[in-house]
Image 1 (cartoon, each protein chain N blue to C red):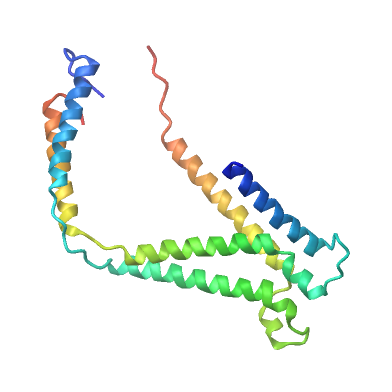
Image 2 (cartoon, chains in turn blue, purple):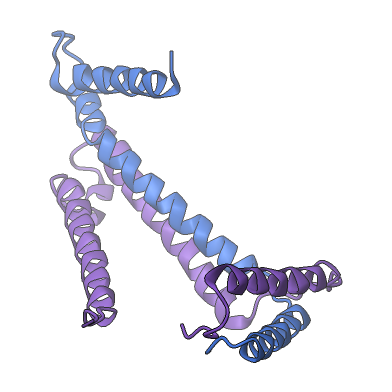
Length: 92
Length: 119
């Protein structure tokens, strides 16, 4: 079984469980509050995934370390490369 | 890109490759420098993003999961909009996000169009 088929099987199982609970397909007669909580579940998972992504990006931005000397050295090497290529005939 | 007229394409490519190799050798000897902390604006923006995402997550979680189990006359209900908005507002936000991405892409592509070469 390929990975794609495994993922599709898992996703369809979860979706079937969600549909049974929120639309009462098997006449289970769950309490109304459970149905009200389960119905927006796909959207809730999407929103929480978006929040997690935003939080991770923000955290990595806040803790990213600066390396000033490496940056200056790299800029110098870029200048060297430009001059060398100009000598070899490339218009920059 | 203007090439030296005498050189063929292969030789130009080889000279560029050797230049890259020369600079790559220098890069591998760059020393490990002590890393500094991120600058002030970076930290402020990052931390505000983290706090905003946490607040949004807690508000939405309480709205969707906890509120249906509270009694209708609980005081918590006054702080939250009716439940229909818990679906409509993320939908509107998604549409606005897609609009912004599309507009940004259109602006960039418009700026980068080149007139067709006339031979």
